[in-house]
Length: 363
Image 1 (cartoon, rainbow, N blue to C red):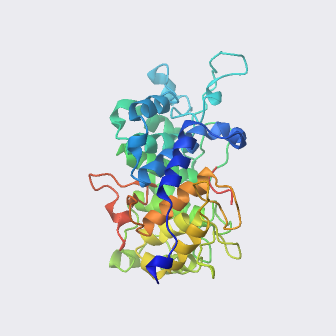
Image 2: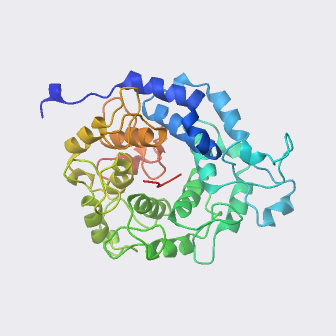
Image 3: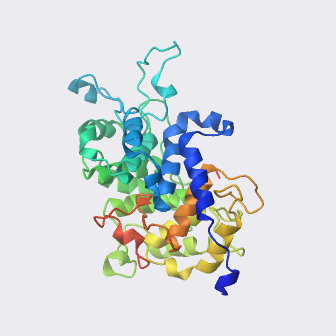
């Protein structure tokens, strides 16, 4: 390929977009207020991939994130069945009465994952957040079949939240928050006949669900990064079928689809690309074609769109486009710890996933 004709990543434009999103969201995001912490994760993590965290006040970010943590009033509360993690937004911390703090604990697994990921990226010492209260109460969310509810009342269970629980334990370097064997058994049941994973047992294979299943298994130590090893040949999942399904998700336009017979979408360049990276078969995709597809979704306003024909960028697809470009080795971007979905730390954690050898899914 002629390098001069290759599309270019508009770094400064993207930085301005992410800085704007980190400070204040446009009115179109009003309906996502309950997911404010998740949106912050997309913005901060995007800046981290672009190696530009110097553009935010890390102490201010840390204090803001920590303000969403729910704390038990006493040790006995940890056995009440409630989860003491992080709430998703300020509104989830208040009742319908003005300025009255809610007695309803709305801590959520996805929000807790995002909070810990942000804190880890900005270098905050996670031992300062009372991780025991998170881990002890998180056990209350695991169901008899090994799945997890994201919140302690009235919620669905699926692979997204098994992944969140595994990532939380990994980031806290403490696995007392879940029964890994039960979680593994649930994940294995979610592998479909075609090799991919559905969000629940018996459901259609999906790129995001497949990432969650594979990343959780790798974080828990049930599968390794080398699918050609003897260990992989006796893996808990059907590895050859998984690789076949994942490789077939690259479409004729160079992009990656999340499900069979669906259009290519920038976010799946990370979800499915990350699976291939973790399994050590990323080299088998057409990386030049994938890069061209992603950059065809680059917005003139900064950020990325879902499809090439879209005009306005959104924070979700922007972040996962940056993450996918990092997997591709785009110059100037930091490598990822693929299993955790954050930039690799200087101590080498995540080196396996970042090696070339080696709302969640609304699309």
